[in-house]
Structure formats: C-alpha cells, structure tokens
Length: 380
Image 1: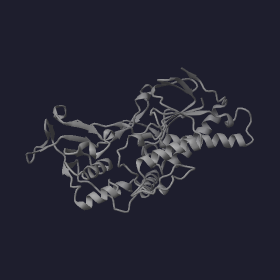
Image 2: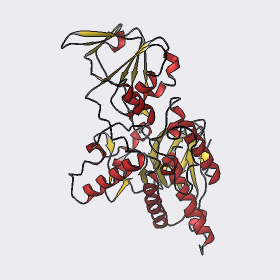
Image 3: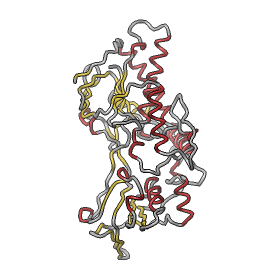
Image 4: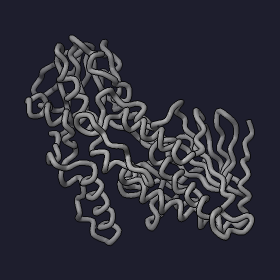
C-alpha cells in the first residue's frame, strides 16, 4: 500500500479526495509504468458507519455555518432547508454521499491498535490484520473525551456523562442537570436543556463565558484562524485570531437561550458531593440529578505510542513549513486536529487546503521513494 489514512471523518475524506485526484490525473496523463497512476491508498475507519465525529452528536447539534460555507473540496454541501444551520444528520448524509461520489476506498469498522516503523514505511496493526504502507496519514481527530478530576466525583450518586454521550434533553425530564464547561458544547447543551418543559438547568464555567458577536460564523472563524497562523509564521505573534473575539459561536439555539436569559453561568465549583456540587467561598451547595461534563476532547494518538515521536505540550511536533508533516518522519502526516497541524484543519471549510498541501507533499515523497508498485499488503 502506498498511502494509508487512519480515520474516516472529514479530514480523512478530504485527504482521500486529493489522493484520488492525484491518481486519476497521473492515469490520464503520460505516466510511465510504475508512476502514480498505480498509486494505491485506503482509509481505515473505526466507526461502523460514515460521518466521523458527527455520528456522536446530540439530536440538536448543528453546524456553525450555512451549508455554502461548510463544504469539503470538490463538492459543495447540499443546501439546508431547515431552521438555523445544517443539522448533524445533514452533515452525516453529506459525508456518506461524498464517499460514494468519489469512490473512496473506506474500510470499516477497522480499529488500529499499534503502528511500527519498517524499512519501507509502516506496519499498521488492526483488529482486521496488518496493513503495510509507505506513507501514513493520521486523521483520527480529537476524539478521546477528556474528563477532569474534581474532589468527590466518585461519590456522586447521580448520573455523570461526557458531552460525547449526550443525546437529547428529553433524557433528563424532571431532573436538575448541571452542565460543566464554557465552550461551544457547554453552551449548546445548556441551551438545549433549558428548552425542556420540566426540570432545572445550571451552567458552570471556569471563567465567565465569552460569546462571539452574533454575526461571526464558521467562515469568519476560519478567516481569523488562518490570519493568525500566517501572522505567526511571519514573525508576528500579536494577532489574537479567534481568541480575541470570544469562545462561543452564537448558533440560533444558543442565541435564543441567551436572549431568554437562560444562559447565566455560575463560577466553577470546588468539589462534587454525593448529591451535587459545592463551593467553598462563600459556602453553598447545589443539588443535581446529573452532571454533563462538556470538557472537550483530546487527539486519540495512543496507537502511535511505539513510534516515540518528538512532542511538545503532549502533541507530536510537526514541520513549520508543512505543519501536517511530522518532524520525525517525512512519511508521517497529521491532519484534522487544529492549528498545530494546519490552520483551521479541524473544520469542514478549513481542512481542504491543508489536505491538498499534504497530498502534494505525499506525491513528491512517493516519487522520491522510487518504486510505486501499488500492491495492497494485508495479512488477515
């Protein structure tokens, strides 16, 4: 196998699109035997169905932007005719159709266990055999839920769940629910819960929530993130990017809840009690039936532990001229994790440019390696 992409979400599909285009262009041109017309690649998706991280969203989850500004390369997202921005189901349907449209070779469910280097590339050990490749693109996304540690968490008698496990406000009818976290998921889930006909909702954040201006959507966020990365590359670290405006995108449900006065955040508590949470100064308690931890995700890179990659702030170090490429191996790429591997590469609108640049580098890498037999090597 020439290129193996670990992941099946938006970053993996954008990479697959450009790999498919590279292969077709070489096939239609004057390629000699052994050239890129015989390039082979595959995508390994741990999920049982298409959609990547969007398969785990709650019922009312929606995009930050209109469909016209939320497209992968090559094919615009179909128009959304419902209220607000496109729903998570609309995104899942789009990603599934995208796979079919470009005939991307996605294998699922395939879970990667370990990756080791070889003289010719990598051995990727999965629950469905060993896949060998010359170039590896890791595009698993920030998919591992992060759970903070607070005193008393183990003693709480109610239900605790991460935002990854939240599905519907109706699951908490007649209950008092505490939402923890001042980011987009915290605001959106808090807003969703305040729409219940019965039950109480409390929202706590580590710092006062920072709402973005009402007119800032995903396209504007992409522009700001790109400008910040370019400024930093030019030696100007003063551009605040998105962080200079705020943290929470005012999608319609959040905007409506805020206008109703339902998004009043309380400061972070000091400990969890068997019946809720408590603050020390001034002393007070809040009873709760359930706690939803909207505390974010971390990149799931555990299968790469054996590569002993150079890291900074727990993340693999990448090459500044091409931030998706590992400094440890020119045949290892990271895509879809955020600015550390490409500006706005964790977004639908932003991942295309990084994927294109990465595939250009991959093609050059394969040419330098010489023989591109395109054989699939899988032991089952």
